[in-house]
Length: 161
Image 1 (cartoon, rainbow, N blue to C red):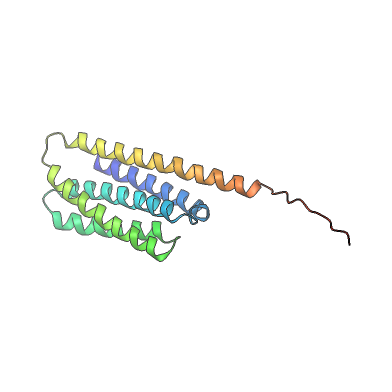
Image 2: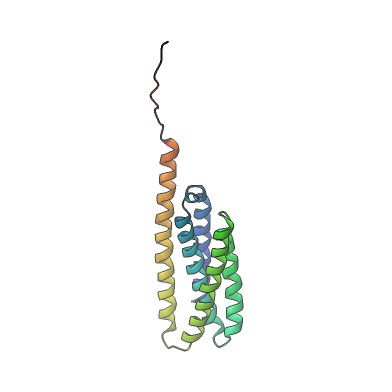
């Protein structure tokens, strides 16, 4: 189950990052939108990876935290890179925060008899956030295409002297 979750989260994350890179030019104009989107991707992805690694390493909180933090740093940087340095820094920090929380949570719930239900729940939450993100990015892409195809008619006035 853990291997399937890792593959699923990796696949969806790659698609999210690809979509984000496709619409980066239309998102750049709004720093609020940029920050929220970078935060959503880096936080939910690193949190999910952290939980899965915490479950995989069980009692070894140090190893799961180190690996998930490195993953969070990488994802945060990759997601924030197409934008400015502040957004890249925010992605790094949010990736670290999500990774550490996820590793801690995964280490705490690994002994629960229904930890498979928890894995399914985490995958569902991840999917809901990513689906919402896809819808937002699709709207940005659609709005960007509409702006490119719109023509502006400027009335001209001739002045005779």
